[in-house]
Length: 154
View 1 (cartoon, rainbow, N blue to C red):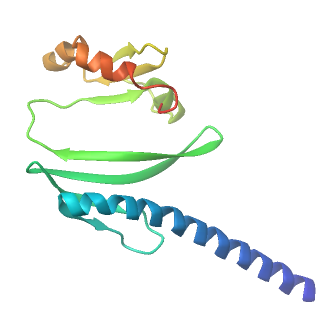
View 2 (view 1 turned 60 degrees about the vertical axis):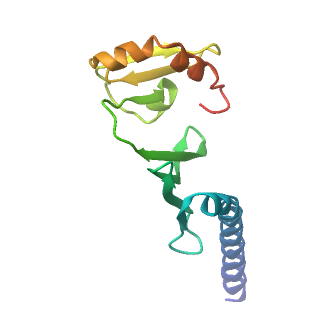
């Protein structure tokens, strides 16, 4: 019976340490996001002490949201920074790495174009049926942006 109590206490201590590490990580991110709150109209939202911080505000009169998400990829967990703008646009598109989509078992993709950067990383751009997106794929700014994405980010 004594061994059972010792094992339970050890598991509880390890769990508390892991919670503290997670909280410390998101506290650092929260402190770094305070500069956004100071310089732009908006606020940081954090629903609990273990939750990921989210910045919601306005930059140049456009609504912007910065948040974090994570997904298990291969043998590791990857954290993503999500940036959302609320801007009026004529069109929208999706840009993602082909490798990531394949790992997510996205199934059969339709209406896409594959573009490769200078490092050999392949990207999917959708929807290719949109004429504006077809023109954008040929734009040097988009190609330069994609070429600046190295394997570290993809």
